[in-house]
Image (tube, rainbow, N blue to C red; front, side, top):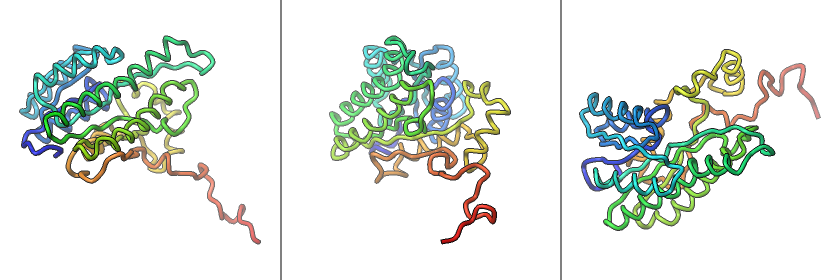
Length: 268
């Protein structure tokens, strides 16, 4: 994996549900101990219990509001007391919608603190701990296709995701010689407990028209990409951002239009 130790130990933030839960399940399935960090105590405990029961690994719930940097540091210390981590997955995030002109200072701070500052605080805490003990480790940060694609009414969310990617590259440059790899995963449309209700038939048709693979991802597919970047399967990767979006970002075609069709072909 990412360390000379046989046992994998680490944490997934926002792991009570959605992509974070799928990532925690993946780590449990390969025999890793996994700390479940979430703001919701019931979801966190349920995830930890089910992962322990199903995979026979250690999994414990840790409750924290990651919008508060003091809470980030507290929960990081608690995780380290439970087990020295050699992987850390920053997944926790929130979405608060408002037009740019209507974005309040409160909304800005809430989204940036939860989605970006927590990543900065927890990543630096993890790296410092790993480096101090002379070990190796891996961080994977969860971004979004909206780090590079606009999303109206979500200016702060998109800015936070862009900041995660930019900061991850700088972390990777600084810490590569010290044994800590830092990579990002950029999911596209994904089925989760939170998104399922908004994927109406109309919205799904629009997504299928835009995404070359003509479907929405399962959270488990995102989890596989996260595990790849966290594990020694990607031992020579750092500063990488991996798109898991069905081809959404790379596709520049126009839906239902093909250049060169008989009616649209030109000469000269």
